[in-house]
Length: 152
Image (cartoon, rainbow, N blue to C red; front, side, top):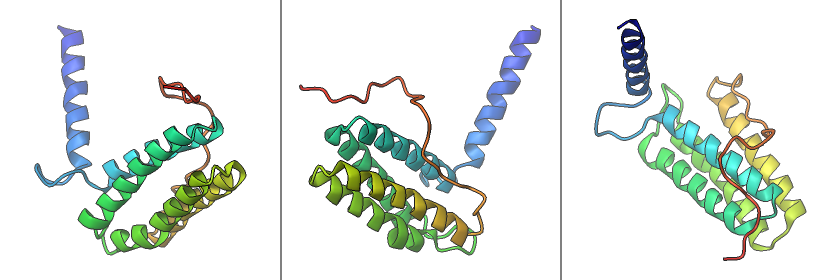
C-alpha cells in the first residue's frame, strides 16, 4: 500500500506540473512546452549535422521552424515581453540561413550557421530577462535514434 501511495503522489505531481506548463485546456501548449520542443529539435539538428545527414537535418529544422511559427502565431507575449515578435525577428532568420546552407550541402557553413542559431536563442533569452537560460551545443546523443545517413 505504501508503494501505491508514493506512485499516486508522484503521478499527481507530474500531472500538476504538466498543467502548470500549459494554458487552459484547449488553448494549446504554452511557451515552456514549445521551448522544450524547440530545444529537442535543435539538438536533433545538431546530431544530424554532425552525421552529415542533410535529409534528417532538414526534417528537424522544419520541425523547429514549425514550433517557432507556433510561438509567433499563438504566444505573442510572455509577461510584458513580445516573444512572438522576438522569435520572428531573431530565430526564424537563423533557421532560414541554416536551411540555405543545408540546401547547398555546405557542411562548414552549416556548422557556423547552427552556432548563430544558438546565439539567436540566447540573445532572445537575454532580451526577455532570462539570460541565465543558455543554450549550448549538446554533448552526446540521448535519443534512441541513429542519425547516420541511410540510403532508403
